[in-house]
Image 1 (cartoon, one colour):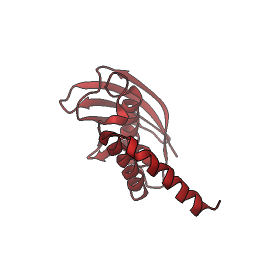
Image 2 (cartoon, helix red, strand yellow; image 1 turned 90 degrees about the horizontal axis):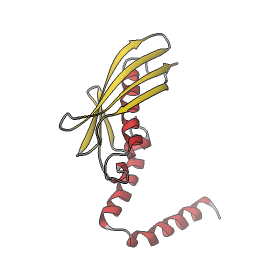
Image 3 (spheres, one colour; image 1 turned 30 degrees about the horizontal axis):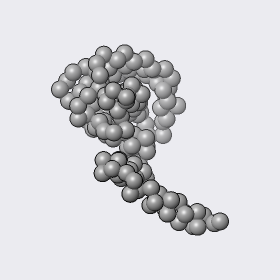
Image 4 (cartoon, rainbow, N blue to C red; image 1 turned 30 degrees about the vertical axis):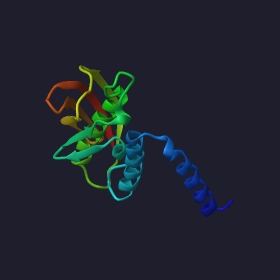
Length: 158
């Protein structure tokens, strides 16, 4: 089977599954497809788009939706961690030349409250920037300014 035939076969398999989903689940499927499409024309990578993360004015916001919820209906810890990691990494990236790459070396997070509401907002702060590393903290809050988590990370620049 060539790649065009494989693509048609995949489309048919997906099409057969769609009627079995609820409206909310179909909305989520549409969000996944929109995230894939948006990541092709954006500096934000797919996972950030999938999680609904946006970077504006030196902070990251993540709208909470189906893909964030854990068993108890609050933001799963890994998504909160990813939001803070993203915010701190982009804070470092915004202060270096475009040819630099930034990698997380180490990160610690303290979870304070359950992540609930419409969105979470991560505000990173630079503590130290050296030649190769940067150290930051980040507070993650809900839209009512309740503290959800506090993170600290070390980032490598090359």
